[in-house]
Image (cartoon, rainbow, N blue to C red):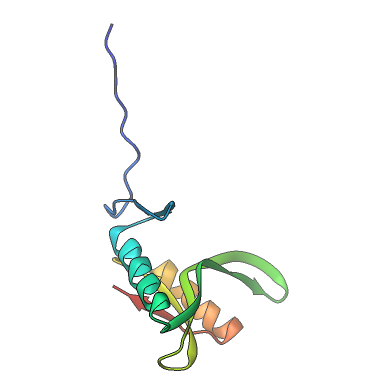
Length: 113
C-alpha cells in the first residue's frame, strides 16, 4: 500500500503563512508589520490597532463586495488614522478596490512592502 502525502496548498504568490500571538498572517511581510505595530503600540506611538478591517463596497446602494485592509490604527506621531495593506504583488483588482474605498469612504489605503 502506498501512502500519498499532501502538502498544504501554496499561496499563489509564494507567500508563507506565519503565526504570531495566535494570529495567522498570510505572509512574513504582514507578520513583520504586525510585530512592528505592536512595538509601536507599546511605545505609545500608535493606538487601536485593528486587523482585517472590513470596508463594504457598494454601488448605488447595492453591495458588490468587501475590501479587508490588513491594518487600521491611529498614528499619534502624525496625529491621524491610517489604513494599510501589506503587498508583495499589487494586482489590478487590489488597486481597483483601494480606489473604490477612497471614493466611497474618503480613505486612502497605504501600501506597505
